[in-house]
Image 1 (cartoon, rainbow, N blue to C red):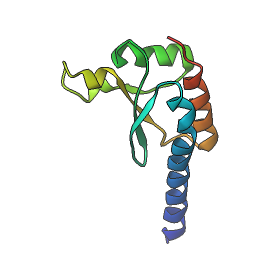
Image 2: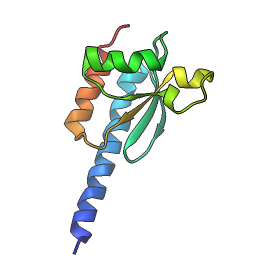
Image 3: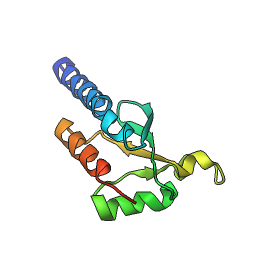
Length: 109
């Protein structure tokens, strides 16, 4: 009885993932890098000098973007964690992903 619902959910997840991929060249031109992309999360490196631990709360305040710093996923002294963010897009539709990219593109820290 759930096959139609499951198919619809799958289509929505794939549409979100496609929107992340399709919109990324705009961010890439500003120094961002897409490191990994799954069904619900994208791992990105940011172009800013600050640590992701400092950037993540600033993104909430300045751009209305909630994400997790890479420092949560790497050992304490690993430089990779400082340059990365994990952005969840499970609750965004494709218009929301466009808004995310617009906000990230406008950043200048």
